[in-house]
Length: 266
Ligand SMILES: [Mn+2]
Image 1 (tube, rainbow, N blue to C red):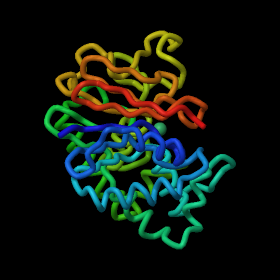
Image 2: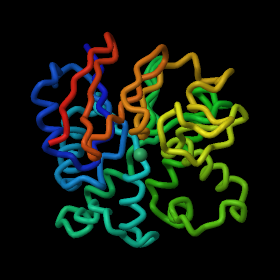
Image 3: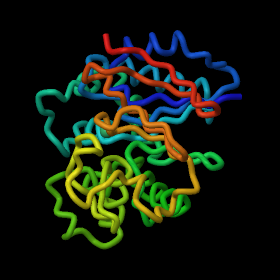
Image 4: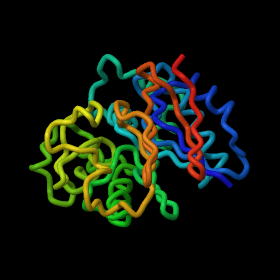
């Protein structure tokens, strides 16, 4: 039984179907992980979401998709917390007849999924977190998001000043930042506002997974979110965002042997 992981899809449904067509996956036995950002930017968020929900129902626990920042943005748009901007192509989901069941499925996705020594997350983990600490934080935030009420809305509202939040909610906001947005940070774990490739990072900033003494270093992390990093497979890391929407490719890997499967952007 193998585990396959696919990078950021961003509504690129055609590429997804082509990738799946060549993936040597046994749908009855193997496991499929998605690193999140299923929707937005690309042309077919609705079709990707319908496929993901259906596949999730069919595969059960063998299918896992963690929430990315664009998945959360779709929920925030649906809840009226943020107004859609140009480029928010995922808003097509809001007009769909099946929007409620798609959105409630999405809101029920985890932020972190761990199986044995493998951990799936969209962006990253704070360097001071063990895998266990990350899971604990994730469960708290997931519970709030699945309810979709006041707490969740405040967590997804960019106009809320985090410094003014109650301590518990501020901790959840910080966790959400690591899970869905983190790329590089300082050795002390202060995030850097930088989206480019690691080689051009500002002084004192390094990829979160290279911070010395990182407490989750005993795990193999499967993540995406950082298109400028691209495909990075190294000890303890599978980073899979190869920028399909940006004209790159959609990438899958088989975690057992690191075999790479790729569909270039159409
Ligand atoms: Mn992302």
